Length: 160
Image 1 (cartoon, one colour):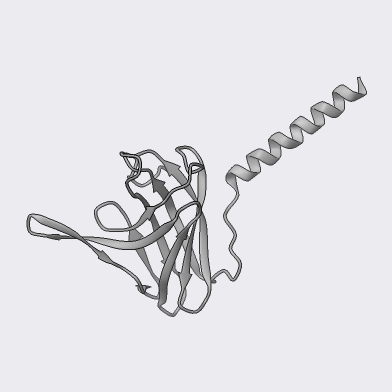
Image 2 (cartoon, rainbow, N blue to C red):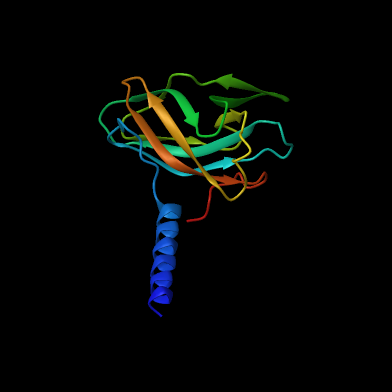
């Protein structure tokens, strides 16, 4: 009987721990104060091997502009900030290195506009899992967030 109770207690502990891990926020060292990231998601490509895309909003609550130099996505070979530009009947992508988030403003990365192109995904990055998104700023500080992985076609802003 005692072994049964111990097993129940251990099972409950593991269940609580698992639930807490699913709702935890990605912590980065040297975190940038006053910067928040929301509505983050990594949209898998419709065709395996093609680039995925990360979308999110970054809010600068400080009195100074914040310059994003690079972005990292856990489990990816490369992540690059781009913006889709429509030029008449043609669209093209422009590199967004050194992107500035103005003081007391937000910058939105969304389908058809600014986005992070993500290539070289590992086999661990699958629909329904989480990875991490880290923004690297010019002052050496960072901001990070959990990045839910969603299937192609789920690019719209997540509910909630």
